Length: 552
Image (tube, one colour):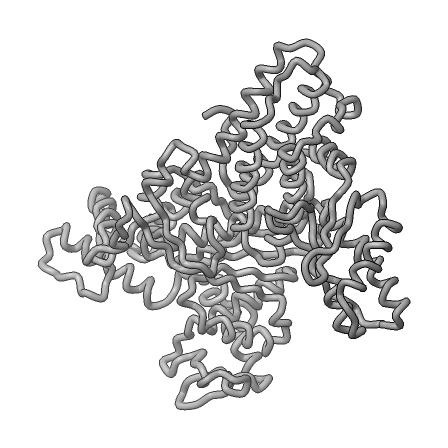
């Protein structure tokens, strides 16, 4: 939390400075980590921003701010200096770093967390694949992002529910049922072809075979129910193997089929509300969303002339249901192919009287698989995609989740299968897990030594004064900043980058500084430092849903 403490202190100084200049405007400045060739811990740009307001030389403002910084927060800042056109570089006092290391060691898996109001209910809906086939790797990426984001929000203290929305009604489910029925009839010896627009995958034959082995009477089989049941079990099993378990599985049938008061479903009620409020109208026997009123290129169908509702109608009712269950913030993970749908569903929420700002939709890009530098075909002629299970079986859960989270959701991801299997430092997840295992090994080895100081209060942390040690402590403290940016951007990928950099800094420290030395005080301090490394690695990997082995 060092960066936040400094930012808060600088903000107070700048407010006083602006008031002295008779400026009442607020100043939004940034505080950043300077380039590696700069000998400073932080840099900020306030002087240049202020200089534009008062039309003076940025270096003059910088010098005046430096005077105030040294005067007002001497307990935090060791040195402040002008850089470039008016940046101010700051060097933090070592005691500030040591204190943060102590906090990490004391708070452990609570460090940086539980800072939010746990009464705020957030629902994170992700995966939500139609139960018409097994999960493919695109679903896997959505699952990794959604689950890790939920872990981060829970760690921060929010009341989070993870939900899977089950699209178990509609034409695709009808076609699924017919596909299984046809395969079943074929097994019974009937000469019948499976239409090209039906589901062709081998999993359809597997469902039919189960029913055939059970020797069920065809008239007594609910093919839709049997197909959804089998596919849903496969989806649940694959997600569980992937480390993802949902708090809630919400069926579309509950809002689109089951009638409540006056026999009206929740979809009926949502559409009736839109109609009554002027957000929808009837034309040619259909119900239309009046979306062109709000800038859409055309009005959209909510209910077809044959009485069937569209996905937009069901999704509108589903999101309305989320708000009615008391959730104040809705987060959805959707594939990038839903881009055009985002504004539409937000518009429906607005028409229903909810703030569209409370609905955050994260779009994630496609995944391509690479083996030995060559891209793999993602599907067969029969339309079967490479499944999540296939990738899980080949590279394991840890590598699979970590690699899915290497890039921001809106960036295309190239998944290198061979790299993900390597047991070497080339593989980033192995590299990080290896650091934890090495630290654990050193701590175990130190248990044979006499005189090791274990009480934090008695450890001489001021012996940790080399560049490698300072850099390592600063990186540990940046865990809180990573939490903050992951929440702000709604993306867990910041933690993969953060942990890789932490592993880099640990290796630089380990290569140049012995942990177990003849000096018991220095050894004790360095043991506490690597204990802090273990705490942060375990916290970070846990947020990503990746295991933390004690040995490799």
